[in-house]
Image (spheres, rainbow, N blue to C red):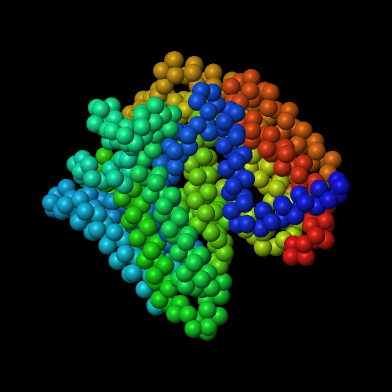
Amino acid sequence: MPEKFTDTIIRALVRFFKAEWSGAFVAILILALAIEFSTSGRPFFHPTNLMTILNNSAAIGIVAGGMTLVIITSGIDLSVGSVMGMTAALTGYVCSFWGFPPWMAILTGLSLGLLVGAFQGTLVAYFGMPAFIATLAGLSIWRGTGHLSTGAQATPKLPINFDLFGRFNPFANLRNEYKEGNLEGYWETFGSFIDSNWLNFFRTFQMSMLIFILFFLTLSIIITNTRYGRYIYAIGSNAVGARQSGINTSLYTMMTYMLCSLSAAFGALLFLGRAPYAKSDYGQMWELDAIAAVVIGGTSLFGGRGSLWGTFMGVILLKLINNGLTLAQLDTFWQMVVTGVIILLAVGIDLVRQSKNPKNVRRLLVSVSSFMAFLTLMTPASLFLKAQISILEHNSSKSIQEAGEKLANGQTARLLGPKEIDYFQQIISSNTWISVLCLSLFIISLIPLYTPNKLLTVIIATFFIFIILPLIKIGYSVTSPFLIFGAIILIISLFIDIIFERARKLDNSV
């Protein structure tokens, strides 16, 4: 009986991890639980919190959905952030200064997105230009076009019509009508239900969330049930073979870039639905976030494999990471660093999935464990480094001043007062030893990558657990789930060979 139960678990694991989105799902679950247990106040899994995450994910999620189609064809689009910024700026500009009605301005923005996609798709599909080069040029062209067209100035406050793509709550009017006593019968009952559950559920229900979900549902149905979907997977898997089988690869490639740019323009509308005005600098670095969401969701950068639901989970995971790092008191710039590392890990997962080699899987698990150690290190180390650098810059500027030289504005700004110096010295003294401890953990966590010693791996996993208490004592309890997860992953890595051996006997495809 125990053996049969074990075999059932292994079969289930094999089936689960064959899905491209499995890694993103596991990461979402772990990070969500980490935030849940590391924060006080309202539970993380409260409906209003979950809807807030979906609302915040909507605009970048739409852009990432279009990017998924391009990457499935083994292409790339580095211009989506610039297209988003340009279409957002011009949509608001023609509405505010040219007198376009909101619906006409919206159609103008979407049309611009289609035209941009057609232009870039033509360069890639019909002129044979590498997608990286064509869209890298687009990144600069469309951002510059947005700045030039609007003078890089923000528009006045946009008409309320744009709220329909963002902050508009479809239940708000019904609640108001109920409170004013204008409803009867069934509608009165429904209005009473909404009013009584307003704070716990309906308050954060916005159109952006609804559009986000419907967009992915629609696009997923299209690529899984239409000729277009089958063709883009075929093009990504083997473009030459697809062409020889009669598929017009140029046409479908161009269509994919058009849909990607259209998605970027549509994402701009969702962003405008939550922003008070339009400006051409919106969407900066969104191409990185979109690509990150796609590869985290399991879509292969080599083309031919992937799913929109994986991308959906990749977007949610990025928002959760930003949330978690904010709780850990890390700057936005550290969040960019983490996003880049996650992209590397996601590509590594894809490579491991293709190789189906237990040694590569073990190394991947050790890499994930090291990443958990890195996330733990960033919390005290970032504060320590910032304080050290601030005092170093103060001393340097002070020395220049004492030498009788005139300080530049930037140097003057780095001079600190006595209270600021005491504050930074306090941070240094309270974070020095814990930073050294976390750095040691990070360094030794890399050792199993090169020396697969089981006893050493167990010792390192024990070290992960050992430093949880010191971190909790100095107020860094948010890092505890990362350490627990890192330790668990290391222990699991010890059994990979056994699991693979049994899985091969149960499933010849592994």
